[in-house]
Length: 393
Image 1: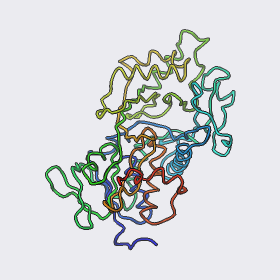
Image 2: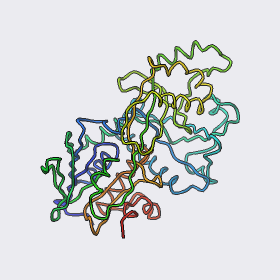
Image 3: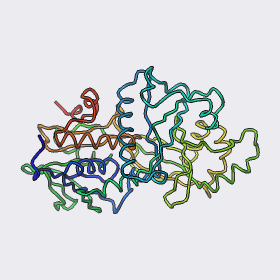
Image 4: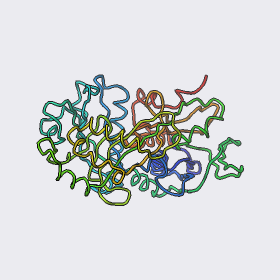
C-alpha cells in the first residue's frame, strides 16, 4: 500500500546522475522532492562528463555485475528515449567491444541479451584487423549525461536548490535535518536520500553504524575537434595503414573511443578515455593523462591511434576530469542504510565508471522501494545492491 500523500515528500542531496535519477523516479510516483547541491549549476561533478556509453558488461557465467548492468542499460535507454533528443543528446549506435587479451567473453545464452560476436564487417568498420576478437552490443550507444541530468531535474515535482553546501545531517525526532557549516538548517524531511557520490562519505561517516566503504576514483578523458581530426586523417602519410574512415560507432574495451558528438562548446568532437586513478580526491586535468589516453587509443584502435598522433599536441587536445565513487565489488549501494538505527536515511551511490548505465536503475530501485511498489529487479539481484549489506551488526 502506498504511503499517505502528506508523507510523500523526500529530500535528496546531490543533483548529478544519481540524485537526479532518484528525484525523477520519485516525482513520477507523486512525491514532492527537494534536491540540494553545493554547485551553482549543472555538471559540476562527474555528471559533467561530455559523453559516455550505456553498454552492458558481459561475462562467461553471466555474473551478477553483468545481469545488473544489462538491466541498467535497458532502464537508461528507456529513460533517454522518453526525455532526450536522439542524435543530439544520445544515439543508439551500437557499441563494438574490442576484447583485448580475451578479457570479455559472452555467456552461452548471449543471444537473448542483445550482444553477440562481432561480424567481420563490424570489425573492419572499426579499423581492426580481420579476426580481432570483438563483441557487438546492439542495444547500446552514447549519451551526454548532463542533458539527462537536466531533463530529470526539470520534472514536475522536483525542486532544485543550488549553492547549498551541506555540511552535516542529523536526526531530530522523526525528521532528518540538513545543516550548513554554520549550523543553519537548510532543509528537513522524514526521508533523506544521499546521492552525492564520494561527497556522501563525509556526510554519512559520523553517523552510528555507517560502514559503506565508498572510495574516490578520478578519471580524465581527452578530446578534440572533428574538424582537426578529419584534416589529419585526410593527410595521413601512410595510406596503406590509415583508417579509411572513423568507426561509425563507439568502440570500447580499453577505455572508449567516441566521435561525432558535440563538445561542451557545441562543435563536434572525438573522445578517448578515461583514466582510472584510485584514492584521489582531486580532479585537475593533467598533461600526463592525455599521454595515457593516447596510449589507450593506440591499444584499443592501433591504426587510428597512429593516425591521430598529432591530435594530442598541447595546442589541440582538451580534457575533462571528474571524481567517480566506487565500492569494492564494483556494485553500487542503494536503499536504506540501516533501518533500525538510521530510519528514513537512504543512499544511492557507488556507481563507479558505470554511472550512465546504472544510475537510472538505482533511482528506480530507490523510488519503488520507498513507495512500496514491486521492485525493478529480482530479489536475488537486489540483495547485491542493497546498502544494508554493509550495515554493522
